[in-house]
Image (cartoon, rainbow, N blue to C red; front, side, top):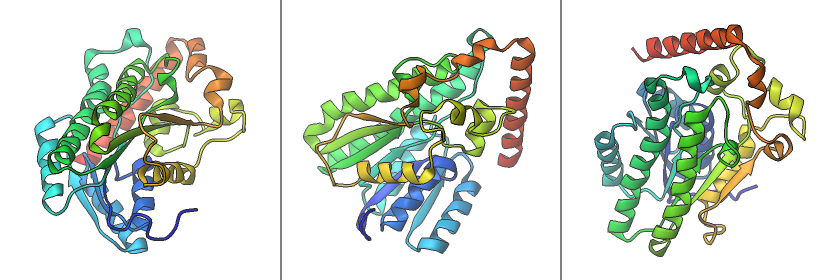
Length: 290
């Protein structure tokens, strides 16, 4: 649906771009002619993704292994990226989330989500934005949020709080930075099954099963749909669009009132099984990083 070469001459950074939603968006931008930078905590994952994308589409994909919770490391990465030519776009995709009864949360568990989603997103956005302002360049930021910023998220309170902060940042900086030609928008997608998301938010369940049962359209979202919406927001097709969060979920949040509320019926046994499943996935991820 987009013309060939739409992003020729553009340079876009995608955080959490080595897998899942981030990789899908990065690949679409690459296919449309952009130079891409992707970052993630596991550089090896980003390297593999970059090689696979370039094998299909050609072009340039540069990779960075970084923890966006480290503000100094973020600033150094962005400085390195700008040293070979300025960014024109940023996708804030890196995130963390898991289901838990809030009374069972540790401060470490809360911080694991809040430090990535709220702090990390701000660090990257500020590092990029201040260079655009310094150099007198326009730019476009697209952040991935969640549908439950509008009506709360039981059992995912750290995410609900942190993603709400990202939505507030989107509105606030759209107002503050608009005079510099910088615009910010956000996408709040419904369920688009990916490995990491499914194992932490739907442990032990068929990926997408719960959504298919209650969604007005009877299905989950697709990566292609996310790619197309992100491409439109990142493009110059409507540069007067700024400060908005677009929900893409087949009207599920409107129809059901939110996510995860049905988990109120779980007892100790179900929460114990979910916690063990999530901890097992976390241990696997740590082993892969080492």
